[in-house]
Image (cartoon, rainbow over all chains, first blue to last red; front, side):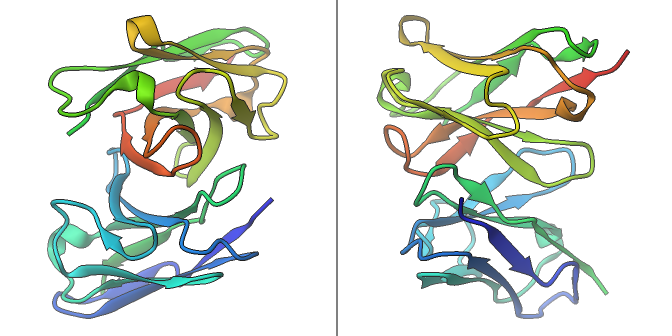
Length: 107
Length: 124
């Protein structure tokens, strides 16, 4: 099974900061990776699909990159509403797997 | 936009069974339930997301997490646009919010839309 790791967690930042979250797969998954945002008490929301494609309606300050085993999610100008936990998710192989999550909060 | 609604959560005693359902609700532009794989994903209180099971668009293929294999069964009724999760021999560690989620494609395409979740509490 493919294992997913994320760093850092937690991540403390300020409004306006550029924030980068990394995700690593235990084996090559090409670009079969999604990023989700989850706020407390809510369902996850898709931000990025296929590693680098912005989901419709998601602000352009979110971006994704990477392929193979190493991936990043970047928030270019952190806003108060971005305080959440972020998960990466591989779907290259069964079983699909989520990373442990990165909680982003304010300093 | 796709709106998925789960039902069937509640309090269950260890060793007993339960069944969850999920159906699209309201306006679901461009979403044909029978054309997409569907997943169950759970989240224990204060913990991360754990993938549980997937079923192909036509129900012919299923796959399970090791933690539920042999105890849980995923199924679907495309004539009623409904996804199910039959949970047998429930354990305390199965306590979680259970989300149904839509696959991008027919089976292994990743998840795009999620339901709001239903809480299953396994406790005596």
